[in-house]
Image 1 (spheres, rainbow, N blue to C red):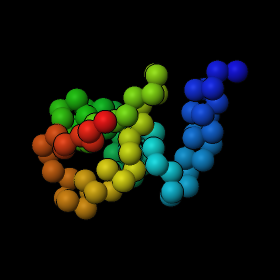
Image 2 (image 1 turned 30 degrees about the vertical axis):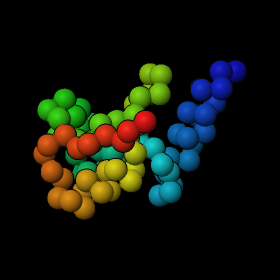
Image 3 (image 1 turned 30 degrees about the horizontal axis):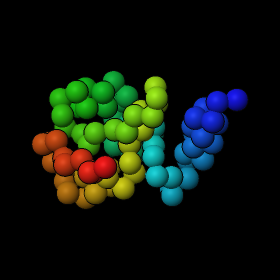
Image 4 (image 1 turned 120 degrees about the horizontal axis):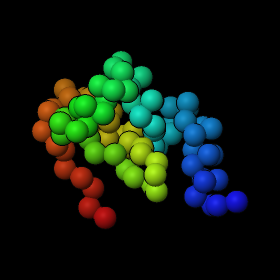
Amino acid sequence: MDPMRTMLHAAEATSETSDTLLITATEVARLLNISKRTLWRLLSAGKLPPPVRLGNAVRWRRDELEQWISQGCPSGRPATHSR
C-alpha cells in the first residue's frame, strides 16, 4: 500500500482529537461554524490562512487557524512559514 495513503488515512482516523496538527476542510468549516462552500470562497478571496497540500489532500495547520481566530480573523493573507 502507498505510504502516503496510509499516513493520510491514519491522520483522518485521528482527526477528531484536539491535538491533531493538520485538519481537513470539513473540520475547518465546523471550527468556524460555516459551510464548506463558504470556506472555499473565503480561501479563494485570500481571507483564510493558506492550507498545506499533501498530494491531492488539502489540510490546515490547527495552530495557525487558532492563532488567526485569536487575532480576530484578519482578512489579509497571513505570512506563511518559511521552509
